Length: 481
Image (cartoon, rainbow, N blue to C red; front, top):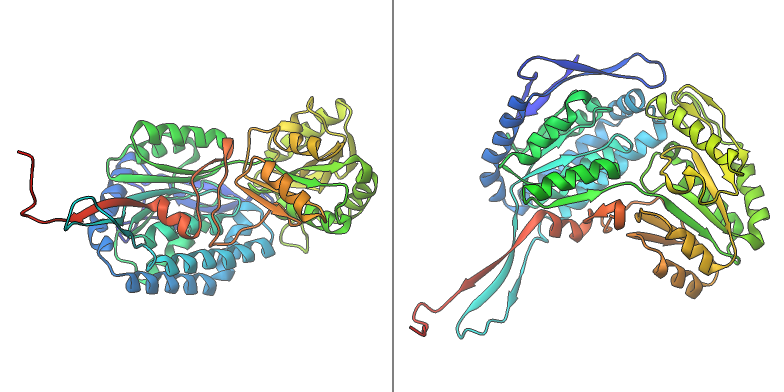
């Protein structure tokens, strides 16, 4: 069955009836067949969302809240469908897919709670008898471009707060998981959102650039949010800027986990294992660099290797911790990173095995600046260990990156840990916790090449509304001429 577009509340094929197939990364079988949108479909979907905006913007907060909460309930009821689609399309494990459903529903419910938090403020005016206010107003049509790696969480996050703020939305699904993203839209449609308020467009991978360009350039679209790689984020940001449209960009990461000399080693190992290998390391917050003080490095690395080497990996339909990478070709990249590092002096202390798109938990000790993995985001289960002498060098290495999304520091001295956390260039930093973490109410985003803007809680209101200055004045006021 073909995954159809959703335009103005109607399910439809693309205007030229073209389709494309997404293949299961493990079996190579067809995972889903989806409509491949055209430029005509772009025009239709932006017009439909724009037509629906005035009425939705005037819809009261209670009605918006009720619809969002109903969508969250429906999503939870469809958990099995979501899990099956996500395993087949992306190679994810069942537990990771189930967690996606749970947290995505949480994002929707957090957005529902924001519907009555859109207020403004009264501002003292220099004009006698004048009431001056700032009021938050929805922007209009919001384009959301979501990725495949946490598709339910990030797809729901991309549209929930914009909807809560009174915007209409277009979700451009990932070419790697169109069915999974379509299921998200179905939850909102079944909840009773008015026609045109929530829309979905899928496209052939070969036509992604032209479709995204047309969506951003469409005059009806007033805001863009994108979660994905930094290279693509640069393109999105440039197109949005050229069209004078604000963009929220949540991009790549090279998250450091600093293990200081007084760290709780067992706790740090637990956090590193989770942060590095959850979802095969295919998370923007994944622990990419374990930066450990040389004085405890031997003990820490021995314990880390002992844990990592026992993690089961393989077909995500079986009882494994590490399932499949998104495509078999990614395994080639993992092997290239290993070969480069080993050829330059790093030691492969764990893993390095693969079976097609499935790759074992892998650790490289003694990584330095000469190696590709020191700077490149692996976005897979191949991770580097960097030994340093003292806190100052640990901070220097942590900041020796173009990225700045998430970080973590392990120390039993809170003042020492805070000093390191404050010195690290990142949008998120956890003390004595993993680099991977998400809560719907928290301001989520990065700095530097990890993007700009924030999802989550009240920070999301600032992203998806415009602040307007409104006054009520004395019609008989005095003018100078």
